[in-house]
Length: 279
Ligand SMILES: [Zn+2]
Ligand SMILES: [Zn+2]
Image (tube, rainbow, N blue to C red; front, top):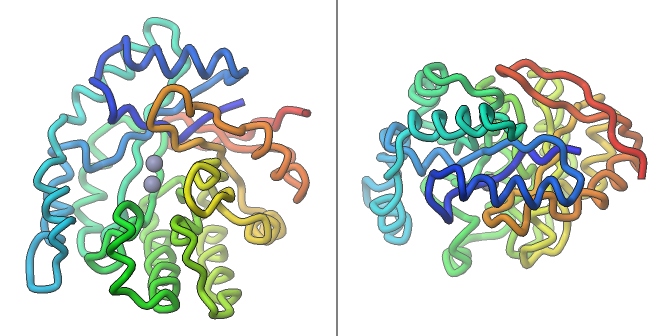
């Protein structure tokens, strides 16, 4: 089993901290981990976020957060993961990149400079609104519009061709807000884009730990993805060691129940098939 969505951000970039994640992973039967730190931990990515702090339509809580992040360097991050590998930890070098509409070229340039095994593309920001970590900001939003804009942005993210894996596909539901729209066409369009780009869809247990209380993506979406022959990866989105491999049996059970028999692993941005474990 693999866990390809792990964050080290709540501790230092040290081998000891990383080892804590690996020890728990190993104990849960995981044979390979991928670290996918948020791009906004790294100073190199600051220019891609800068526009979110500018203009009348920017959000104060976003400015505040952006002013405090971007403290580490990608070089130190990569060095740590290479060191871990040299010490026998089966770890892949990933990163979770925010798709930000105005900065595609910049993102491409930064990603191209480092030896990533895979790049997860995620949408956490619609326009200038970061929707997934500050619930109060939803009070000023129209839910249906938020869903519509989310899937439009996600489709753009996929079509940018920047990403190997699309992270937490329906994370717009994170706080439990539900759209009353029929989103079938929008979701279908995003999935079609994933299929066309040859990208992977991530199955994530993170939503089980959030207010929404269900996996990403919802089972109906996953079923549709299977019918479109979209490959999958598996991740917990752990931010602490104890969450690594969270609910992986459940994720595999759901993947198998809609038809999947394999997932994808990555090396140097090349995907390879790996059989899903039998439960
Ligand atoms: Zn994310
Ligand atoms: Zn994440």
